[in-house]
Structures are given as structure tokens and as C-alpha cells.
Length: 488
Ligand SMILES: *Cc1c(COP(=O)(O)O)cnc(C)c1O
Picture 1: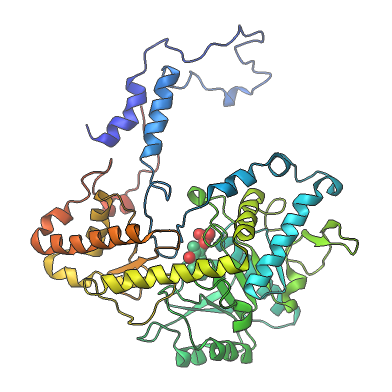
Picture 2: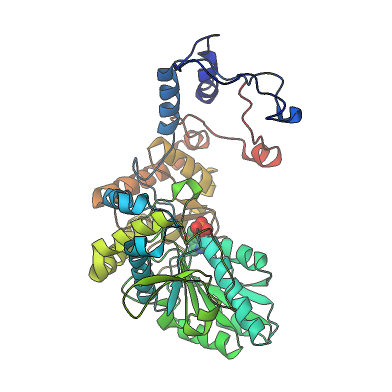
């Protein structure tokens, strides 16, 4: 029996008929549900087959499952574009303060002025950091922020009586960009990158028209390269009547150094769960605040916290042109508290230092790995860089095999096969929170894997060896997915 099967079956195998893990007082209400209370069609004919086990068995079962989860708290996690930096635990403490954790969104304003001030200050701080005029904290993720921003762009053009249906994205863009544009009702036009990995200005000139609603761009882009011609790019789009959308999901390279607002962008979203070290939370809750320039303020989602002339705070719910509410209440409040604590702990100088160290760490890794893995864009990188595993093909080894082998050494693999414009792509983002020893340990392992590829490729083809689940059949997994675990 494989470890995985063993784990799934374990709790059921331990089951002994009649064994209970709890003791409750006698039930003093009818135990058989009556048809009056629950309609017959909703009653199951027999009790579900739950394992009958002791409490300790349940605890061991779940603890053992939790150990199989890889997180930044148990190892280095250089997943490019995802910024898996360490989340300082002091921010968790702050988010658990009773005055913040135990309030209700429908409480009277007068009783939550402190929380409202915190939200307001965070809005102002994020606007200052990005060079925008106003910020909404509602969106719950990066993609949600993109959609919110695009809906505002749509409302802006419609309000001016212009029919603009096309959103331009470079081929190196994050997959959520074209997806969000489509969900917001736009058609996407993909433009190729230059051989240097940057926006092709001629291609951009060819793509803009009176139908252009916006260009979506990440800068530094997903290859970790700074678009040095950003001012020209902005001019091309603006002259065509379009707006510029900055995908700031990952702003780890630019804090305190440059601002999307100064580069000419009209809208920006940030992922607090990347740049501001709030937890990624297994797919949620995240937070994707959106900042806009003045001309888009009327379209911001409502309600928004605003400051009255007397210094008190209130919910602004007015606004005919607002795109409406995009999230229940005011965003993922607990995540916003963590981000606020993080930004206040560092302060402006500290945030700049975060970016400087993130960029330094990435360049250090790139320089040490360049002799072993091909680096297609030979330039100083920002917070992340891409390299290629294509030189290992001669030994029958692909990037996927390198990633699988890394698992045996206790590392989370980098992002692979993304961006799509680099063959056998490996995308590494070390983040600023790792020590030189950790970076060196990972680099040495990557180099050791190259030697293994030359000397014993078979070893890599069958990796990993130390994980609960070994090599999966990815084709079958994609073609015939089994989406529920049949634990019976
Ligand atoms: C992570 C990321 C996104 C998407 O953010 P989610 O919170 O996962 O929706 C978008 N763009 C870039 C560049 C990213 O790195």
C-alpha cells in the first residue's frame, strides 16, 4: 500500500464499530428527525459511514496530513511571481487583537472609529506607494482586483460615449490578465515580446486603435525585467485614447523606488498576499486593493471609508457612477490589518530596503546559476528571473524532472513552464526574507542536479523519492480527473 493510500484509508481502518471519541449528556429532544421538521426527500435513509475512532486517532490523522503540506514556514519556496516571502508572526498577533478581530461590519460607525481609521490610513498609504489618487480595499484577490479595475475602465469609456472593446496584453503577461479582461467583457489582443523580453513598441503601435480600452502591463514584467520604455509605451496607449492598467500583484521590486502612477498608469492593483506579506491562505483569503487616478474615482466600488472634516470616519455609500460593491462588507478585513501592521512596521525606508534586498537576492542567484542553466535575458533582473532547463534535454531531462528532484531535497520548486515565451522555463523569486546560507543551499542543490542529469539521468526521471506521492501521471490526471476521494 502506498503512503497516500495508507493515509486516506488509515482513519477508516482504525474504525471499530461502536467506538466513540466523545461523551455527551443524554439527548432531551427527539432523536429521530420528524418529517415535519425536515422534508422526507432531504432525509438520508441510513447514517453516513463515518469512522468510529478515538479523539487521539483523529488528531494524529489530521496532524499527519498537515505535515504533508509545504509552506514557507517549513522551507524555502522560490515560486516565481508568487512572492512566497516569510510572513512575520507579529502581524498575526495584531490581527487577533480583540478590538479588531471581534468587531462586526454592521456595528455603528461611532463604535469602530479605530478600525475605520486603520482602513483609511491603509488606503492612503497604498495610494502613496503606488502614486495613485484613491484606493479601494474591497477586492479579495489579484484577479478580482484586475476585474474590478477593468470594470471601472469600462464604465469610464462608456460614460464618455466611447465603444472600446479591446484590451492589449503582452505574451509574457500573467494568465489572469487575459482571463480578467474576458470576464469583464473585453476581447484580448496579445502582442509578442522583443527578443530582449520587453514590450515590442512596433507591435504595440500596430495593436492600438480607437477600440483600445486598455493595455495591461506588469513592470518589472513577469520575466523580471524592467520595461525601460514605459513612458513611450504609456504615450502610445494614451494617444490612442486607451488607459494603462498596472498589474502590481507583485510589487516587491519597486517599493519606494518607482511608482506606477509616475510611469503613466491609470489603474493598479496590488496583491497584499504577495507584496505585503499577508498569508496566501491556500487560495484565499487574499486581498487585491485597486488604486486609480482622479479621472476614475467616480467609478470606485462603494462603500468606501472617508474622513470627515472633523477627523471622524464614515462609510461613503453614494455615487451614481460607482461600479457598485465587489465584495461583501469592506474587503478581507483581517488581511488588511496584517498588511497595515507590515507597512507600519517597516515604514517608507524599510519598504524600500525590502525591494532592494529582493532584487539583490534575485541577482545573486541568477549570477551563480547562469553557468549551469541558460539565462535567456542577460540583464540585471528585478525581484525574479527566468532561466531555461533546455540544455539538459541532451540527457533526456526536462525542467519538470529538475522540479521533481528538488522535492527530495526539501525545496518547493520554482515556477516552471511560465512565462510561456521561454522554452523549458524556470522562474525563480527568492524574496528578501531568505539568508545567504539558504540561497546558497538552494543554488548548490540546483547545481548538483545538473551533475546528476549528466551522470545518472534515470535518477531524475523517477524523482521524487521522499514525498508521500511520487511521480503522477499528469496526462491521465488531466484527461480523466478524479475530483473526489472515494474513501470507503
Ligand atoms: C499572482 C499574480 C496575479 C493573480 O493574483 P491572485 O491573487 O492569484 O488572483 C496576477 N498577476 C501577477 C503578475 C501575479 O503574480
